[in-house]
Image 1 (spheres, rainbow, N blue to C red):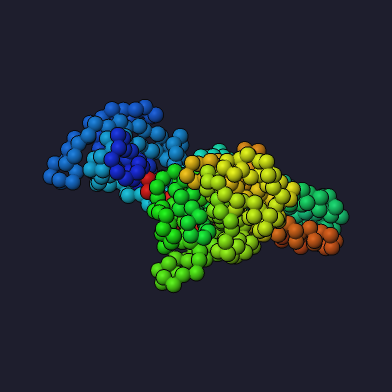
Image 2: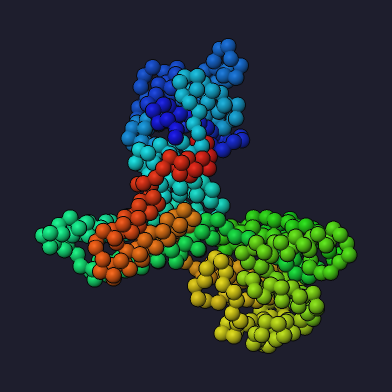
Length: 495
């Protein structure tokens, strides 16, 4: 584990040029190190921006760089880390910032390890472990929804929910232990029925957190969406339209896409890895055949499949084969080329998906709108189900953009099975939290069974202690150095 008695320094802003760059110093010698940088003996005024000039150092070419900076001193305990912290705001030149870093090290500071500032904040009680992990998630967020979930956890919404469960669990444990401590006197501070009812309530609260964990993980980690279909149905055009960029090559030649093309996109607030694949068909071309094999590999790992069909023509054998191959997968069927006239839509709807259609619908292009109550049931996605079957088919035009907004909403619904307001329910988005909550839930279930068996209090107490320990590991009240190192080493340096 890192030493916490020395003074650390790091560049806190991203690599590259910018208007401003920040060098952060934390530890008992933070102020003296900053004073040596600025050539200043007078103490810095707490929480006050002090203008200073860093003069070039003599003798060392790497340190012979000066700058005009603003130095802000945050004395312990009123700082991010809970220690003395100094932030030096300089011009955002890599040369200038590297020089300041080198000179701070020469003045007695040590280069910080990844996440060491936040680790010190955790060790000094400024953050719990959930909030510390939320800091990394907030930095890594690429969609507004990811940032919102991370910020909610940073504010302590999830911590509050778990702490409340732990507190009520401790009350049950205390009563059972008190009953166990006075067996000869015949004291029973809680009956088995009362304890069982309390544990049932605690189990329900954990179940509610676990029930939203699949969606929370989807938002935090994103998902893979594979776009598949026969050649020339417009897969690459749809891929580019969803990205709003010409990322994939589009031509009228069948089999243009030979390999997987993957790009990240923010669709409906979710960070999705969109995968454009080779057209699925029988071919003698060895390169194209390898592309088709990779398409099938992508199908096996995708969280959702967009099956693209050409809605301007009748369905062919290749289309039928792809629909049959993906029937057991979480999928959305996309009828592309709705800007062209054709008769393929109705044969697809009636012959393959078994939907009742409104022949008078006037949605984009030929216009289709399935009746939700007649939609077929699909295999449950590993990302969870809310009981609502998502709309399975959309009519779009990758050329004009018609219907894309509906498709994006449908993709989000198919993945997350409905919207969720995370401020109404603390979001569990971290797999570590989910695993520990599941462990606590299992221990509660075993304790309930023991109470129903009318056994001595010591037996359910063992399981209740295990549940309490699992909850404490989530917030960091009980944790190991190895776990802390594993969590914080993924942070960026300077945070």
